[in-house]
Image (cartoon, rainbow, N blue to C red; front, side, top):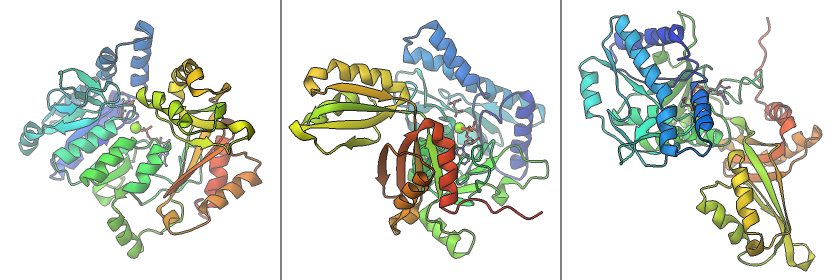
Length: 421
Ligand code: ADP
Ligand code: ASP
Ligand code: MG
């Protein structure tokens, strides 16, 4: 069981969580629980680091930001004990959850679970702070924003859990962010592949890496709400959304439990920025000169467009980078103006990426053209396009994000049918 920040926000909420955990244990299950910091706490800790030293040392940064989860894991263990349940916390270094050294974006390498499994077999509930691990040097690491999802999947794999239930503030994965589109529909199941794509293009309900790990390790995930009434369905009745293999999905469709849609979901991402380099020499090696230094600095480039060469053997190159890396990328490119040979650099962070995702696209044409038509009918201009086998993304003006998501949701027939009263 994994509980996100809103589920852990305050002792009152933690008591609700403790009741859910106790019910699972009372049903005869061995339970490991992974918790996030209280909602808002990680942001608060990050701000302290920035105030203390704008050029913070990533190792010390991780010491600070990982502490939110230490607090909630201890509090949940205490609350469980107060309900008469055997429970203890296991910090990242105590298990240990071994990660690579990359501070603030560490990846799990191994989890040594024997001690944990022994405690579980002994009837003790294990409470594990998400987000944190320990590097080979013995220093605390963290796994990137939303990383508790990945901790939970990692632990589930390490103890060979039957299921990894991810409790959050919505009752499942929807066709799009239900906080933006009221007509979003809850999905009974989503394939790993689709969820991986949805997460990577902005559906923050699960951290992208957690889905990749689940797919690799074959961990079954259910996303569900921790905010149900007292008579809400138990997790074992699968009230949430299951993240499943293609095979399991085929079975659900065959049994009539699930309809196969062309498009499964729509996501948006406002955290990218666009860079245009004008009048780049149109010759072999020019593009390599632009992207090699960005790659060396671990700056992820997403969409790339190289226009057809103009006369005089020049071309414009447009691409996107995470907004957080824009200043660094810009400075780096300006430093190499002579090498690359461009004329001007134009940047824009007032953009959003809108993506439609669905495995149905593999076998059906026309998904992209439906998108372009629906957007153009509303006068929304497309600045860039990229596609993968199961996804089409476009870049638009940030102000049009909500409108675009709604329009596309309707265009692909995803709107929930209102029930007659
Ligand atoms: P937690 O703190 O529990 O980890 P998050 O805030 O990380 O929760 O993720 C849950 C949020 O994800 C929801 O409140 C919702 O606004 C957002 N979200 C975005 N896209 C989707 C989607 N397709 N389905 C469900 N929730 C979504
Ligand atoms: N507390 C961390 C964050 O806010 C990790 C998590 O909640 O998953 O990003
Ligand atoms: Mg989250």
